[in-house]
Structure formats: C-alpha cells, structure tokens
Picture (cartoon, rainbow, N blue to C red):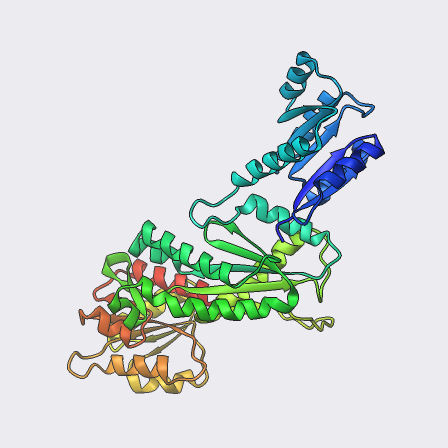
Length: 437
C-alpha cells in the first residue's frame, strides 16, 4: 500500500502525459497540473514525495520553486526542475532557489526514470526508524492523508505497548528496543503488501489495511504479543505477573507486565473529511482499548445516537478507610474531607463488605492488622479476587516488611508504616485520577 506520489507541473499537456506514462506503475501514482493553482490543490490533498516542475509555466520557475519549498516545509518533497536550457547559470540559479536537481530536455527516457526513482528512494531512506526499520511519522501522516482522499474503504489501526515506560525504567533501553523490534516483526508478519505499516511515535505503530482484515489482524496481534511477552522478563517477574516500582518513602506499587492496546477506525461506517478528525477518532478508540485490563483491541462500530443520549460521567471521589487505629483513622478522614473526598471509615475488618454493598470507592486504604493473624491480607485477597465488579485501588498500609507477600495478595500499593500524610494522599490522588479517566 506504500504508493509514492509524483506531481508534474507542466503547461505542455503532451509532455506531462509522456512523463506520466514513463513513471506511473504499481508503486508510483502520478498527478499532473497545468498551472500553479491546480498544483496547490494536489499538494494539499496528497503531499507528493517528488515534484517535477517545468519552466513552460507563465511564472518565473525560480519564484515558483521558492514558494513550493515554503508551502511544503513540513513534508519536504524532492523538487526537480525541467528546462530546455542547458546554460550553467540557469542551473545554478534554479538549484539556489530550492530545487534538488535540474534536468535539461530532451532527456533519455531510461535516464529520466532512473533519476526520479533515485530521488524518491533517497527521500524515503531518510524516513525510517532506526530501531524498527519502519517508516516514521512523516511518512505515516502522509499515508493517512492519502488514504483519506481515496474513494476506497479503509481501516486504520493505532497500536502501542502499555506500561512500556515502566518496563524501560526497570529493564533499560536495550531491552526496550528489543521488545519494540520483536513486536514490529510480529506486526509485519500479520500484514501483506497491500497494507501499510509505520510509526506515529517511537512506541506507537499504525497499520492501514482493508476493513475486512482489520479485526483479524488485531486479534492475532493481541494473542501473539501475550505469547511472547513473558520472554522479556525475569523468571520471577514473569511468574508473579507484575513488577515492583519504588515510590516515595519506600512505598512499593505493582505494575502489570506490558500489554498491547489497539484502536481501529474505518470509513465503512463514518466519513472522515480531514486528518485531525481521523487522528482524534483514532486516539479516542485506542483509549477505550487501554482502559481494558491486559492486551485488548477496540474496533469502531456504527453508532445509534439520539438527543440527550449520553450523560457526562460523574467523577468518583469516594474513599474507604479501613484502619483499626482510631486516632489515625480520624486524622485520615479529616484530611481527606478537606481535600474534597467523600469518606467512609471502618475500624473493624468485618464491616468492610457491609459498607461495600452500598458504597463504591475509587480507593481503599486497608491496614494489615495484627502480624499474627494477617487479617488485612485475607481481606485484601477477598476484595481483589472474590468480590465481583470491584475496581477499587487498594493502598495497603502495614508494619509487615514483606512487600511481595502484600502485592501478591492483590494490593495496588505497599506503603510501610509510619508514613507521611503527603505521601499517602499523593498516591490517593494518582489512583483516583486513573480511576476516573
């Protein structure tokens, strides 16, 4: 699907038609324009990779080249001047105006074709990601825009790796690069020559494909990624299913293993009129996939809409404090209310499940209890693994210095006592913001 685009600006219809026949093939699409106004429309719609401009125009070719160079500053096409002149000063003047090459007519057809191909190849060789050898954002945005302006049905997939920043922090740049290279190889294996694969950022991939293939590709990528991901972790981390991240004052929170999230949009159900609209819809759909636990994909579907059909989601600022120390629980409650949280407090572990029948907290502060009975750990396991529809984050406060045991029980944060109020409320805010995204 990676079709190069050439624009020929030439007042001579027969000559531009001849050049078009020489250059056009499965890999190169050629547009012609007899004047500058028509050329501008094509440049805006398709962002050519190479522009051939003849001095047959009614304007000074040097000024036209200067204008094109300014107007295409972001896309940087190769600009080739065509002229019947072979004077050295004409060549110098035109090259100084911004042209990349100067071809004197008449020119041998094979040489003409070879020169144009060389310029296009050089242009694309500068647009590879060094790590994955996929095309970078400059080419990817071009391809999205060109796809939008075709009359065919298409699907665009935005793919990334969740938690990769945490992975990089723990395992380093080299391991992260290897992970990206492996995933790019998996992505390449899922597509064919009719598809486009590129990157929008170092860790964001896109695929442009047929709508009928998109969901099958997404399903394959999710399965294939989850199959290989454990190989990028130590045996202990892979077996545990999460890694430890240091926080403030020796707090430890667990971070899930990396996963992949994929958002898919298509013009099959919705018409797109500009690049911003496509990118906005792609990001929104991709975010829905990121909200799911583990690797997941979301495909844009037809929507049934009506007036007032969508309500603004109300933020959940509910906080549940399970703390046997009455003095500490009073202090936590007072501080939380001052910061705008709705608070419920229980001093007995047995009361937690009764409260949860009618109360949905975004975050639970749970004390470990006595070291002898470890009641808090038992409660934590029940909350995380046995309580249906509970999505609350659990901050486990404890004097037990066994972070692995605590986090294996399902806690989202291990926070040893004693702790500073600023530390625990910093984590409450972070968890609450994530919950309400």
